[in-house]
Amino acid sequence: MKESRRDFIKTVTAGSVAAIAQPDGLFRDKKTEIRSSSSVTPNEPKNKFNIIWITCDEMNTKAMSVYGNSFTKMPAAEQLGKEGTMFNYSYVQMPKSVPSRCSMITGRYPHCEGHRTLTGKLDCEPFQYGKNDDFTLTEKEPNLVKYLKDRGYKTCLLGKNHLVDWTLHKKWFDKTSEWDSPEWKNRTDPYTRDVSDKMKRADFNGRIKEDYDYNLLEDSLCVKWSKDFLRENKDNPFLALIDIGLPHPPYAEYTKMPSYQIQLEDIPVPPYQPLDKVPSVEQCKRKSYDLENLAEIDRKRIRRAYYTMCEFADSKVKEIIDEVDQLGLKEKTLIIYSADHGDSNGERNCYEKWDTFFYDDITKVPLIMRLPGVFPPEKKINNLVEFVDIVPTIFEMLGCEIPLWVQGKSLLSLVQGKTAKHKDAVFSQGGVEKEATFRPDLSIKTPKQKVVIDFPESMIRSQMVRTDKYKYVYRLEGDCELYDMISDPGEQTNLVNNASYLSIISDLKDRMLRFTIETETNYPLIDKLNC
Image 1 (cartoon, rainbow, N blue to C red):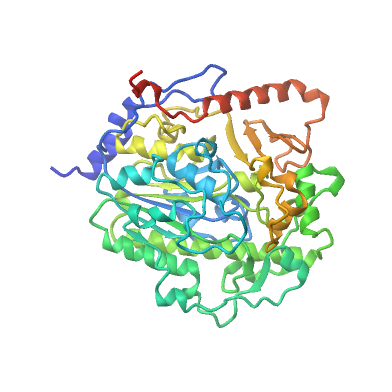
Image 2: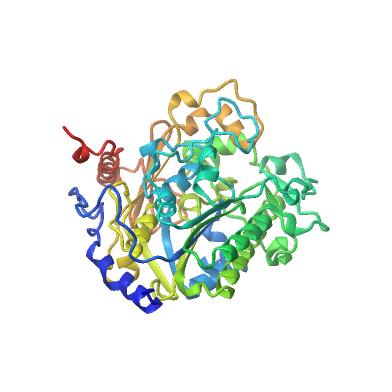
């Protein structure tokens, strides 16, 4: 007999799911906690529901109206915030697209399988679809996509593929982006590109041409294909990974968006400190981009442009939500609204992101989840959470044992008020090994590549731990950082050399060491070997 929606919700919120609830947190105290109820391979799902996971590339919570920005109008995020649960302190595990997305879909920390950067090529030639040149997921890695596809789910990956090895693109997904379609191939350049050299160094392209058809923009086509997939599979359980390309730079003014009507003089310019007062990694980026003398009006223009990009991305998300609701799928479809990392957008006189920046502008990103009857409406979670926690949450909702390879912790008990605790520390990591950064043979094509040439030390491996009160960043090279996140949420005053904080730094280092050891790659699974 087909399970009713009421039975499904009852099962998710009270039954088999509750029986596999995890301990109070991997980092609740200094004792090692081992999840004994986990298995290598999860059992069959008891509850089947649809999943739509939308990732906006480089979305900063500070730009979003639902997180308090008064300059933007983002109805999709606002609707999900009213109808679902919003997380106010959700952190990605790396401030870089591919590693972050791989971590999100596996529930594992990026370093475990070496997901540390974007491209594996030995030069910086332009990306070509079909080439296997990314440190993306490989077939050997367990993940949510494989699990659900093997159990009858229809799957799609639409938009930017910063997730899977191209050899697996068609194998794992029933529908992928139609890059060979005439509507994609016949697109023309949408930008005016009438900008100064300084603005170009800030990765600003100008405006979208006044007469350009917004329906031909990449994200519009991505959403068109996504809606096709939803209609084609409305009677099947499905997993839809929809990767919106915006608001990733190059920055551009989307003149049809509401915030473009704001007068430039009304756009605030974030304060920033002199170069000699900031950590070395920030100095490196600011010196390389050479934007210290960028006019204030240009800073305002770039900031407003980013707002318009966020609004356009959100308008595409709204189309997906509307399609779900019109198809009658709202009650059995989990929608996740997220980002892979944030964007500086002028904070600290910096633009874009950086592999070893761990400021909240980059690592604290939006996370909103809606499934009626499971995620309470208008609920706001102020606990620290990590993006590795999403996959175990889904497994628990499916009624499955959380597999041993998952390193995150389910959010379900927290969301449903069964516990007030989750984790008291979250972690992020970035950078590469020293030998990979000193590359005099690299040709410079973007400001980001220039930073690697000018200041290779800024790319060396680093790691962040963030508790309720403090954030500590340890770097193999360059300045370490410590911020009091209560008194200094903007992370303007680095306390790492303040002798009054030595014991706090020591404790945070101990946390970081424990985390690193606990999350080392757990392959092979010794208890499954015949030894």
